[in-house]
Length: 147
Ligand code: HEM
Image (cartoon, rainbow, N blue to C red; front, top):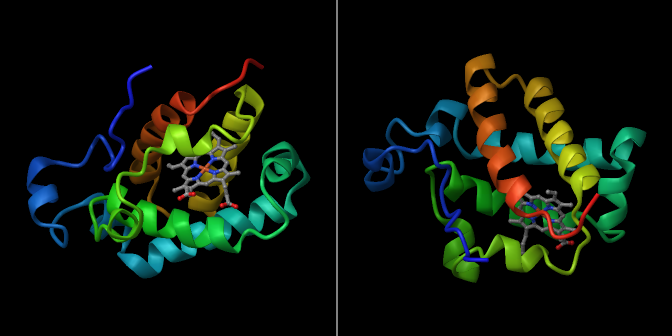
């Protein structure tokens, strides 16, 4: 399979790419502090909610590194600062997820956990719908095992 280039949310505009602090999804969301809040809630929920148990089980005991990396990645993917790429180069997300079993259950739990986190940190409804669509594309493409 060819590697997609998910370095940025597909809905980001060309002008957003040249003006990271302009009218990007990143700025609509409220910048770094809001991305941090979203990622923190996402991993807290993954840890707390029994309905995300299969997703939690794919992760190691310590979620600290995943928390930091998803924050860095999302900042750039949403059209903000490229913290992840500056540190690690191209995300190659599908390749980096190959060590972990990702089927429909894990995909759907990831998406539900992120949707709940967005709702709880107060992401605006229209933006949340747009992000859910974009997250679906990325999460579905990450599947590497049936079921
Ligand atoms: C589809 C279900 C998914 C599962 C089961 C999953 C699972 C994981 C696991 C187990 C890790 C390793 C965490 C660690 O370092 O301890 C990881 C890393 C990561 N995930 Fe996911 N993930 C999924 C979807 C996504 C999506 C949709 C995104 C982005 C929108 C994403 C972004 C990342 C990033 C940026 C890392 C860090 C990669 C690195 O540099 O090592 N993941 N994921």
